[in-house]
Image 1 (tube, one colour):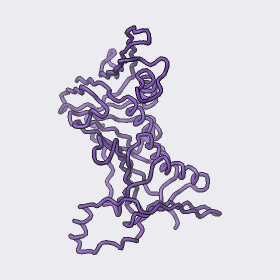
Image 2 (image 1 turned 90 degrees about the horizontal axis):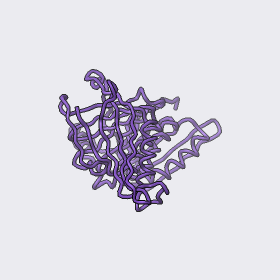
Image 3 (image 1 turned 180 degrees about the vertical axis):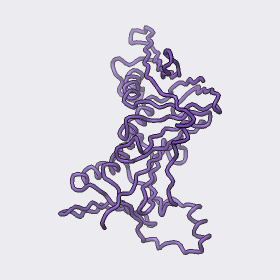
Length: 307
């Protein structure tokens, strides 16, 4: 099997990895000619939050350049790696490559590029990152980092399945994720759980309850994406749509909700889907909604309460 690619946006890949590392110690990356998937299954996350995300090959230039893959398994390669190890390398690559739009490290290289290859050391598969460029004195420099990876068997691949969820009751575009994270962080000092509610008028509420606290934060006039699937289901069941002001809710652990909100680092728009009493699904887009190169999908499980 062979895999080689240039990393065209080291900073973005670094931010995606930081978002995943907030949830778990390891991650599965599924590579194929069509898509690159980043997967954090529920058993890897201390809060039960799962991630099933993808970047399509059509938009791979968002992250990768000269992307090439070959294997005997439908040209797919599944690797598992430790996120801390990947973070250290990407942090080094990010500071070495720098950006003309960002403050550069004094050690940053010019005319630099980063190449990722799947290699072997003996019987151990490794990911090899090569950073090449020129120093301030115009001397060529090459830095190589390696991390061990595990190639997943077909049996292990079959065990990884995206969660089955009911049809969402509502979709709503979330406010700025950093703003949302700051608010939820304050709520975490008051309660262990947060109730997330929304309606088709674009109203979003976060409610934290404790013996001495009952605090609700509200946003109004948020965008509510239309869903043809929802319309089809309503027509099939001959049921009228719910009143626009009807609130749909799910209660989740604040700790897990905060870990999902680390995805504010990616900087894209986000849509939340509420499946009442089951889960909160959040889609964090890589880039703008109309031209997103990929999406990070977070599944935050519901927490049963006595309410």
